[in-house]
Structures are given as C-alpha cells and as structure tokens.
Image (cartoon, rainbow, N blue to C red; front, side, top):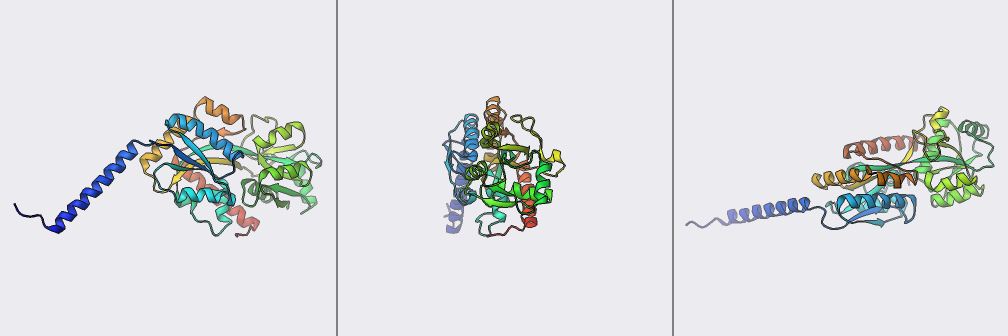
Amino acid sequence: MKPVPILLFFGLCASLSQFSAAQSSSIAQQSYPNRPIRLIAPSSAGGPVDVIARTVAQGFSETLGQQIVIDNRAGAAGLIGAELVAKATPDGYTLLFGFSGPLVIVPQLIDSTNYETLKDFAPVSLTASAPYILLVHPSLPVKSVKELIALAKSQPGKLNYASGGNGTGIHMAGELFNITAGARIVHVPFKGAAPGMTALMAGEVDMMFNGLPPTLPHVKSGKLRALAVGGEKRTSLLPDLPTISESGLQFNTSGWYGVLAPRGTPRTIIVKLHAELVRALNTAAMKERLATFGVEGIGSTPEQFASHMREEWLKWGNVIKTAGLKAK
C-alpha cells in the first residue's frame, strides 16, 4: 500500500473538518432554538417600547417554545442597543426589538453611528404600529388642526412643541407637520417623552405629538386636548378623533416596531423566527393585549419589512434635509 502524500493527507483533514463544521451548523439550525433568546429593547424599562416588546415577547415565546428574555439597553437614542445586535453573533439568539428612532432617523442625524441599518440587520417581521396623537394644552385657543395651522401662521415662531429628544419619532412627526402645514412651530426637546408631557400639561409648551397609551388618560381627564391622529386611520380608542389627513394635509406617520436579527443569520433561522412570530401576532390574545395599549399588532414578511425600512429611511431623510436638521 502506497503512503498518502502529506499534502493530500492535510487536504483530506481540512475537508473533513469543514464537512464536520458544516454538519454541526446544520444540526444546530435544525434544533434551533434550544436555549433562551435575548431580545434587545433599546429603551428604558417601563417605557412604551419596553411594554410593547414584553407583550410581543410573551406570545412569541409561547409559539416558539423557548424563553425570550427582554434585555433593556437604553442610551444614545437607542443606538447602543441597536449596535449591540448589529455586532452580535448571527446565530438567532440575540435579536433586536427595533423602531424608527435608532433604525432610520438617528443614523441620519449622527455621523458616528457604528452600523448601517439597511445592511447590518436581517429583518424578521414588523410586529406593531401605534398612532401618534396631536395634543395641545387646553388653554390654546384651537380645537382642530385647521385652527392650529391658522394660529401658527398668524404668529410664526411663537408656538412651540415638545418632544422626547432630537431624532425621536415624535420629534420628526413635529417636523413633518411643520413642512406639510407650511408652519413654523419651534421644537423644544426634552430628555424623554414623559418630561415633555409634564411640560405640556403644565402649559410650558403649546403642543406635542405622542403615542396613544401614555396620553389617553390625560385626554379623557381634560388635562390635554387631542386634535387628531397622525396615522392613516382613526383609532378605536378615540373613534371621534379625526386623522390629520382628514384636514387636507399629506400627513401619515405612526410609531412602528419590528424584530430583526444580525446580518448573516442563517435563512433557516429567519424563516423559523418569522413563522412563529407571525403566528403569535395573529392570535386573539396578542391582538387584545396590544389593543389595550392602543397598539395594532401587524405581521409582515422579512422582505416587506426590509422594504418598509427603505421607504422610512428615504422619508425621514427628506424631512431631515428639508428641515435643515444638523448631523452631530
């Protein structure tokens, strides 16, 4: 028997090693998930993003058959949590509960973002949509969007609006309103939506866009006046409240949320995650839980979610450019 040439021997070893690694990877994907999954929520505990993430995670865990642990990573307008997922091992055990701020708005305002949204994530599915509500202090002499615009135009630069900080979705809703209404209402950023709401109720600012869940009790008590819904349709929790577009403006923006994995996550894992997440979102229990917060559960294909992010990237990029917002 002739000896095997040493180069051929090492070549065979390398091939066997690669085959073994590929086989192990395939087995790991087939048994996925076999341990708890970490879902990064780039926000503080107890806030709207966290509440929606935990609601989705509960139902998702049930359909997936594995524990999903929420890991709150607040800071830098959500960039810290998003970057953590972008740089994570793409094995399906670290996911992002993403939203517009850290995905399509703040990266266009800050030059030093350490990830590229449209390249560094593998979208799984949109999960929820929550309308923004246009709010004013009750002392402001307006009861409709048209009256607000007329007042703002008669006093350019005198009215102001609060937000939860530069680059947040409610900040950009205010900028979009200025552009579409042809008004000049001054932005006043706060360190979070809650302080902005406190200032609005105290009459320190004139108006604000905010999500429905934290505003509903104050609207019903009369501490705030709701003028309109920012989304494409009315909300069942305030059915008499018109949409902004019903006033004749080309205005449609809502808060949206979705689950993403790091780029390079195997397609088989993305398919598995997508199927079980959409199954959870379609359950009556999930729809009812989200509806109590004024949030609509939605599902999409990974491709639809990717397309949605591209559209949102262009939309907010145009608003940033038109409003002359400066990158930092």
